[in-house]
Amino acid sequence: MALVGFPLWPDQEHLPKVAPLFDHLDYIEVVPETLWGPGGRPNSYYQIAQTLADAGTPVVAHGVGIDPASLDDARRRVWLDRTLRDAEQLAYRWISDHLGTVSIDGEPVALPLPAPESFARLTHTLDQLAAASGAPAAIENSAWYAYPGEALDEPARLVDALGDRHHLVLDLHNLWTNSINLGFDPVQWLERAPLDRVIEIHLSGGTFAPDTWTGGPTIRLDSHDDAVPDEVWALLDTALPRLTGLRGATLERIEGPVGEHEVQRLISELHRLRALVADVG
Image 1 (cartoon, rainbow, N blue to C red):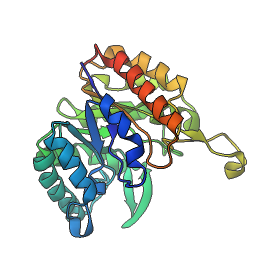
Image 2: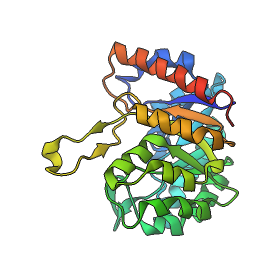
Image 3: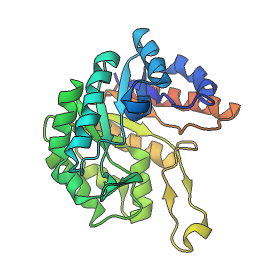
Image 4: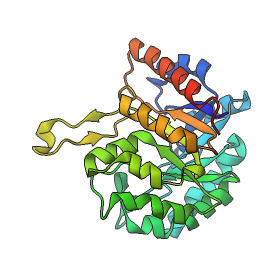
């Protein structure tokens, strides 16, 4: 039976608003970098995660900064050292990061960007992540707004990189976003993907960019700020029979203003997700 989770928001103003969701969760998902204060010391959000972990709540880690494409070994070592410390204290059930690069010529970028080196170094990066955390390591399929090559080749490259010892976090809204922005059939992507290596799924909503942004084709934003679309639920139905190794299903919602009606909707989505994955994995 797969478990159901929700992110621990690093947001003192808005985190209390989603506190009612915690009665409906099996685990929390943390972004490791948000738990680090000046000098990498644990901050107040780390203390929240530690309190929950000490009370018996499982913790899953999902970062953005490990950067499979990075050649900056010094930066990587700092990241991994902090991961080792956190994993010992929070007992991560598994740990993951995003496919792509978050640094171009040493300059940070806001979101992961596609980079060929991501695949070339992915197995090595996941080996390092698993060794540092003592937990299964995984990579998430990222949302792209442009892609250097054929998007439907991505699953085969994931098969090679993951092998039989690493895992995939399957983000279904990212997949649907890519199918719109890059123009391919998401079901074909799923047919080629190593779904037997999926350890966790992510579901979320998003929005379409205003026409004034592009003046051209419609662009879907992976903004995590709306209800899970019907199309994403349908992709989950398609994938479920092959998710034989699934351990967790995370409903994602970006931190920020959340109305009372959205809290109730998120609870309903959690219940729907739990019913779908109850007999999977």
